[in-house]
Length: 153
Image (tube, rainbow, N blue to C red; front, side, top):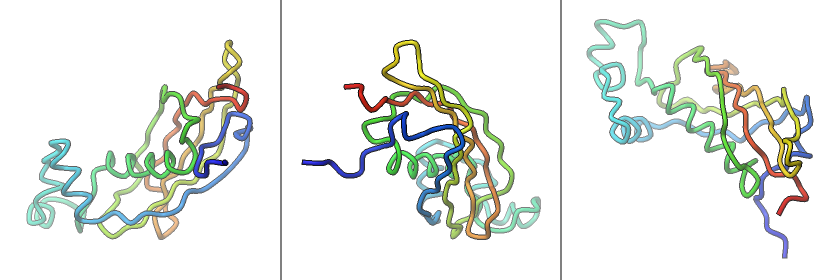
């Protein structure tokens, strides 16, 4: 019987391939739970009165780390089940804030793909744009992942 929902193999991620995830709305509960779980109790995330008086940010802002981890969740669910072997490296650039109520998705382009010496796995780097409902790129990051080849068991 076939298993549905499995990730993409190395062979399915050639240089230049582009794809997009489904969207997910960032909620007030997401922000509060993330802040409490991580201990990121910075006033920018917790004190709306402080923001009104001391910041150009207006509204319930989410930590960039939360937006990034939601993006990774969208990608794990859709592209890496049983095929993602390791997260090795990345560069990350936060370009704009994400607020409660924003809906984000990830647009990916494969910018590096090569087999490892072992030949049963590949190294794949993507350029990932976390994009909000207005079409604005809020975060760009370039993860390098180890991905299983189709014939590897």
